[in-house]
Image 1 (cartoon, rainbow, N blue to C red):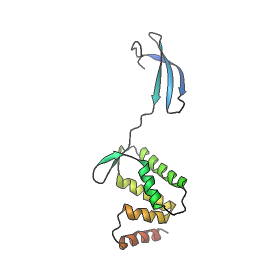
Image 2 (tube, one colour):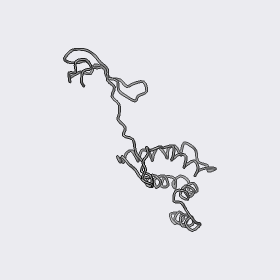
Image 3 (cartoon, rainbow, N blue to C red):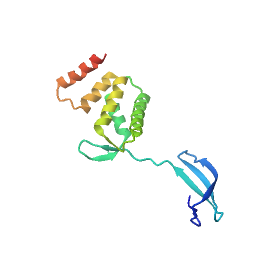
Image 4 (cartoon, rainbow, N blue to C red):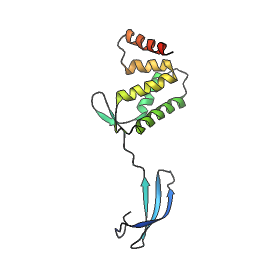
Length: 151
C-alpha cells in the first residue's frame, strides 16, 4: 500500500477490523520508510449486473421488478411474502454466481417461472400468461397440459 505521506510502497498493518456496518475492513498502517501512520479501507468491488432487454436496451438489474411481477402473479394466493423474497434472493444469487456481466430478460423470466412452478402452479400460470404473452386460449391450454403431464 502506498504511503499517504511519502509515497513509499511498503507499509505494515498494525490493526484490522470491520467497519460498523460490516461493508469494509478498516486497516491502520505504518509506513516502513517515514514511520507515519495512516488508515485504509478495503471493500469488495461489486460489478453491476446488466439486463439486456428484448429491444436491445440495457439497464442495471433491479430485483424489485421481479418481486413486483411475482406479487401480481401471486395476488390472492396463499403465499407468504417471505417465500417470494427468498425466491428473488435465490434468482439473484444464481445470476451473480453465473459470473455473467450481462443477462437477457428471457433468461431471467425462465428462471422466475422455474422457481414459481415449484412454489405455486396457479401463480406460475398467471406469470407465464403475461411473460409468454399468450394471445389465445390455446396457448393457455397448452401450458396447462404441460403442467398436468409433469404431475
